[in-house]
Image (tube, rainbow over all chains, first blue to last red; front, side, top):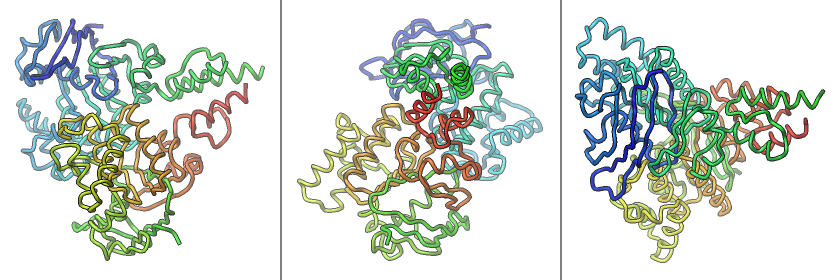
Length: 286
Length: 268
């Protein structure tokens, strides 16, 4: 698969900061994959997203060493309009994203498409579809700032999804959602993969990351301490030392092994846990 | 007689939106309760009724011998501390220390008691190193602990935590768990709203389920998480281990990893 984004030895410091927020990070993001970014709070997850999206250093200023490439071309050679066509960014706090100039949810979702000069009929259709998908269609006529925190998070996601960017960078989109809402957001995001979209998602809910993501980046104090296939990463107990939770099923698996049970592998999802523990029980029954 | 009594309470916002409908609830002193349910189920409205931020439009809420309709929110908040869902709705001081000191100062605690409480609150929430920082320079997850410290420093009998687990990492979740245990030992009455079912299974004696403006169930975590009808109505799922154990036919009341391990070992 083609590499869409590459970071080569990137170190980045915010203006006036006494130490870098990101230290010597090299990584490749491949087209059509779903990446989970995990790490304790303050480990640099949001900063990494800002670099990948091109906000840092162009908007936040500060100092960036190393190279950031988008489709093989340095990020700094793209203008902001071009970047916005390729990449969508959903902010951690929806309040930072909502434009503040639109009086209804419908208009807010349509705002980006208007700026891209999309024909009106097409805007209406795309906005309606996305509002249904993100379950905010019943709020179409409400003012964005009258919505609850969870509803604002859905609105922020909808107004980026509607732009259909090839690459989506999404920062903790479910922190204020209930379990059912959270799962529906993960469903929506994983559907993007079918359309060959690339997703980079920051999220603490590691059980859902285990379910839906393909690959994982783990950050600690600004460094990329582990990356790769989700099974390899999310079964690594050393993550706990860096303040990163493992999926419940991986914790269960490790603890069963410690008690002397011979599990074929460490599960990370419920389905795998049923499989591997089921086999164990079946073997004993023979 | 229960310490907190909610009797036939409904609440309608001035714009005509009914947020809770005819709820009844009894809470004893020293209980440790979780409230779970979907967004919009009425959880936050219910707890705001307890500290007088909202007054019932029907029915009555009693805390001890105080009827919330007869006391101001300021008076009620001496007894019932409420940690807002969004810390930015609560924080209004330029430094962590001034924010946390505000409560005990308003309550006119003497200097010694005030300092003790503030230092204790900063210690238990892990904020000592941030004393002089502006809360808005801190990440959201740490800012939430500033609001928790503010309530702990007021030493109120009842403490309400509205979604403290949102956006917290492993260390934050463990810290919350430690805070709950310690407050419980001090005899506080604790009410926590959360969407994290693993956290509920690990930390609470009693669970209240809300759906569609009503309380639909109250029981132990085991009773709630093994009651499929209640979970379905509230659109909730039990902890991952409960689901796996159910499908593998391993006992009918497992909600924690420890219990799952014993049940699996017994079968092998």
